[in-house]
Amino acid sequence: MESRVLTGGATAIRGGLPLLRKPAAVMKFTTAATCGSNRDFPAGAVTAKPVGPLIAGPNLIWGRQLRPAILLEASPKRESIKPCSAAASSSAGSSDSSGEAKIGFFNKATLTTGFFFFMWYFLNVIFNILNKKIYNYFPYPYFVSVIHLAVGVVYCLVSWAVGLPKRAPIDSTQLKLLTPVAFCHALGHVTSNVSFAAVAVSFTHTIKALEPFFNAAASQFILGQQIPLALWLSLAPVVLGVSMASLTELSFNWLGFTSAMISNISFTYRSIYSKKAMTDMDSTNVYAYISIIALIFCLPPAIFIEGPKLLQYGFNDAIAKVGLTKFITDLFWVGMFYHLYNQVATNTLERVAPLTHAVGNVLKRVFVIGFSIVIFGNKISTQTGIGTCIAIAGVAIYSFIKAKMEEEKRQKKAA
Image (cartoon, rainbow, N blue to C red; front, side):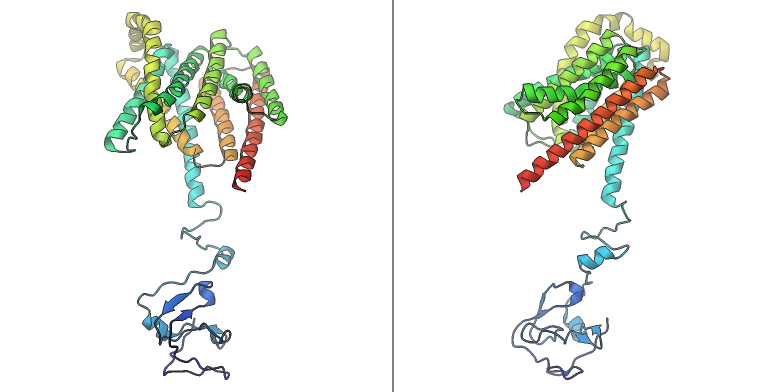
């Protein structure tokens, strides 16, 4: 921009335009570059566009925008004039309203969310692989479940001690609300581990693909919520696919199958009780309290069911196979990965829309099943592979339909 110093009480502008006279009151400064923003200046300062009958013309000199030098000298601070949003959005390499530079689609928010998804999948896959390797030489799922929760509880206590995050206080009312959630969490967690120890990881996750079916059934028959026909129809491929996979699964046994089904039911009731246990705590504190209470529920069955075997030969056999150091290290890290992947999953799903949430859950299960087959070399029949694909596709369709329904409800409430 070009400016010319205006001297005297009034200055004539080329072309015979009216004179800009010294106003007696405050005048407004407006230019096209500020997108209509107004600033107040003391009387006597000459402006490019005074408020009053003089509307057009004085803001241009020889076709160029006017920013008089006298204003630059009178202003206590020089501020850069930001282009309006319309101009900014049309120019390449422009800045958004918060001043963050965008590089096409890959802006800061997108990259951060993508990193959360990557860490969620990575931690989950590592947990499942390490968990199954432990069961290959230490087949005691009740005790391993206790270790998962115990390591997570220690992690939470240390985090509270250093104030990251700050511990939220809990009263008797909140404790009563969280206890049923923690019980269902404990039961679902233990039965999942019993299934992991008994059958292939891929088969357990295929059975757990039925969880949306149990959620829909509980919503309609327990909570009284009407489930649309389209949602029920989308679950048909899930049931069909799981049935096909189960009939020809080479590692099938009733203990693994039944345990995975109980896990589905337990996590369904956990979702129901979670809706009734909404508190003012953040998700990190809620998950910490649930882990502590769930650990208390998991201790008795681990002691009474597996305690005598562990003391008699369980620990000795594991140490003889891999050594004391590796045994303790494996138990510690499987507990850390279990807690971290659950925590990162919670933080990830809080950042995204319902539809992205649905896609993330489906892709996570695909990743786990695929990696477990590659790492452990599990042989699956053609029918099992087809059934697994059908089940996963059904879960994806169900998740998309449900996510769109939730989004429509939000829009109606907002309207």
